[in-house]
Image 1 (cartoon, rainbow, N blue to C red):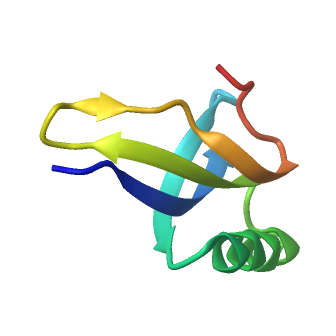
Image 2: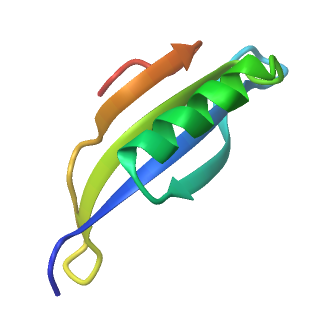
Amino acid sequence: MAKEFKYLCQVYMQNSKGQLVIDQTIECRSELAAEMRAEKIWQSGNYAGVDALLIGADPEQGDYDAPVFITRLGNVPDEE
């Protein structure tokens, strides 16, 4: 199977210990859609942070590329 590319919007909350946790991951149709969704979610003021990112994957092989961040807003995890 060929490599798939996905645009994602990842939303973070802080738990009771102050640690960032993923609240939700939203798949988007394009880079622009992911960026716009992240900005809209961030502007709501309800979340600690939001990432819009691109990730390449070959699910059959279990091979996943490192994420490429499009935009990072607020309190988000360090890039790894």
